[in-house]
Image 1 (cartoon, rainbow, N blue to C red):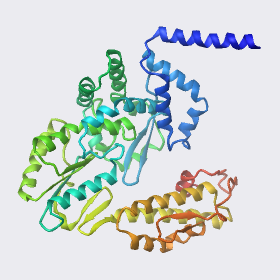
Image 2: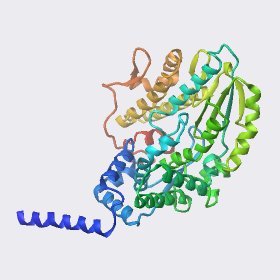
Image 3: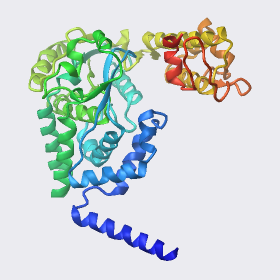
Image 4: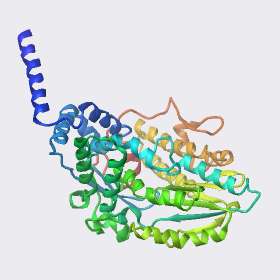
Length: 448
């Protein structure tokens, strides 16, 4: 028995050495494994992740070999339409490809942080939406001297931004960044350029699985879909690399505003930006200059989403409204909470009519969903609003399974009424339902 173990161990050593000599190790297995751990965070309940984890070690090993040998190829994406907070086309890359996305971004994080300005708020650790809202509020208070003087805000939006991105120009800017700030060896540089080229110029719409019928795309205009883009334009919304590379694509615009124009009171979140100034005419003259600069990048300002307003009237930015007395929740966000509660009500009533128990996974999803809104509201002046929404009729059904804390900061699941762990039943529609959490709650209407 011991002899067999020695032979097996020696075989593994020889096999690993043969791999090392057959191609140069551009990616260490450990860093690929770290990228895999990052990729699966908050995704372990998804079917794509679970399929990969059935034999994760072997699949990671094969991916590691493909990356180092240059045989890596991008798989199929799943295309679908989301309607919250607005209609969007999303391409979900295969889990194997998402690991590669995380690997690339992990290798580029340091140089990207050096390239981005302080007021770029998208997909950066510690610099998300709340950071952007607070920076915008700080700039308004600074220019208006705490609302004692007039201040004006230029707010803009780029039209169909992701679909208008020029892939060639974006890839050139990524390569320029790698050559100037990466410090990679020649082999690592070649590897990074090759993989990034594959990601950027991939056409997911040509090799995708539609999760919904084609008629679901009727709600989208042509300039919002990759299916209507040419080979050199458009990035799939849903990939980590798309968010980061799109942010890098507009980094030149950020530096032009901050450094060339000398405007410090500026910030941008993906395709939304603001500029604060005490000079109204200056902001009015900036609009044509911005349009002219963006022409070289193939990006245009949305004609209906460019505005100049006075600071004391309040500015809506990233889901909050910045007012002289503080920040409040946007009405749209409150409306989304009521829509969600209405869905939960329908779901619970549907079960009650059939004398069926609500399952634990569904209760946990409802509680976490409501808490996400209340957590967002806690960032603002919303004590009265939280108390008011907790007592609306729409909340009545949910409160049979949970309760609020004393300050209405969060909702807590009842220990004695949290639903059964698993229930399998059949009804007249011949559907066998199991606890699927979010999927069950959102799609129950299609069943009943």
